[in-house]
Length: 208
Image (cartoon, rainbow, N blue to C red):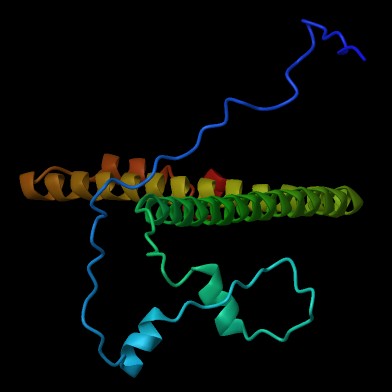
């Protein structure tokens, strides 16, 4: 019997480098304990650790109250702090919305006014066309009425001018007669001058 030849490149069969913890020192450290006392209910409640409740797994199908779920979630332990920029953002959005509403209302009022002006313009144009059509339809009668009114106006104008001219001559003659009487001069020539006017027909010779 011979010993099996060992391969020098093969790994070791047994672990010889395992670390073993050291033993205690010669005098062991004393363990200090407080004197035993009875635990109160308040301490028991404070030391009570709630069971782990998962929001994803419930293998045994237990019915877990919502307060227990919220307590297990830890939301009650968090202190909520709202950033002040949220208030600024909300105020800016409110102001922008109010300005946008005002702009929309102003634009609607402007469009309404423009539509009203356009409607009035169209109505005025239609009214003008209707008036022109009526005038063209009654053109002869309108021309006759216009001509008669013009003739009446011309006659009235001539009448006024004739009256003024006639009374001016009368006053001039009266002044001449008064002056001659005052000076003692014969008024034959003055009467002859006054008689030259066509008194038989009055002042109608001036107008017609």
